[in-house]
Length: 331
Image (cartoon, rainbow, N blue to C red; front, side, top):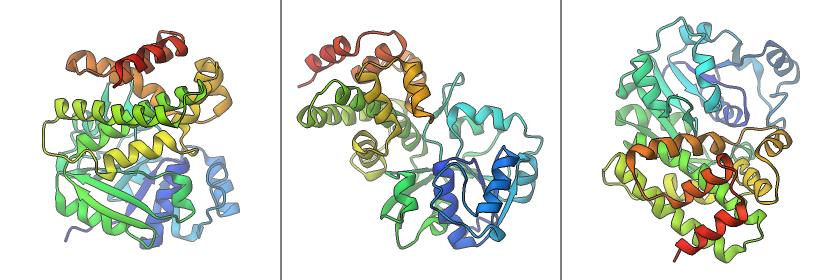
């Protein structure tokens, strides 16, 4: 059985904190890279993340903190990346240590801007990490509910099934159920797209469309997702599995969803900038919408929901006008 070795968390947000809680519960030791020394000092003093999920307490004797990413990479075997996708490149620019021999797990539900690559492809193409050393975590999993130890289901995707299985053992607990998959690209792209569709759901909510229409929107969204995943990687997958449809539904409906909240504000008439300022948190779907639109210019998949969200966010088309056009395309 593959041994994940010493595990480190890269990132300091809410999802990073939730994953750290899960992992340290098994291993009783993790490395944790956070870029700000003041946050690390506050964390040590208060025994919880001072900025995110502040109700989750840790035994800080079980954590090796560092603001030096190279120190963490040198000392740990498995690196779990949980940074917002727009900031991933900035963190990695500080690297002076090879990572191709490390087991890289990405829990980033976003796409690398400018590169228009999902995170596993970025690590493979830029840092020569072999696919057998690349994994992703997917599934319906709001950090807030994981922190509350509410039952959640996670899927670990990896080309090497033995490594995927080994990492599921690190995540499994009384409140985390796990399974494995080899569909890494499908999991990552669906994680990007569900954020786009959650923004669409939020926009419609802000425009006072009801639950009846939201159900139709989600039905069309899962069909659109399946068309794209089939085009980008035509393998046998069950789109109704929790890692695809489940993640789409929770992100589209839940009040914990940043992307839905962001979309609701847009539907109510906020500008993109004012919504971002008021939220004070990153809605990954804003960046994912532009990246997916650019990717689909090559793929030519029929994606009317993606197009509508792009037109509203980037072309400044009226949400009322754009969503009305979208509703006319649904059946």
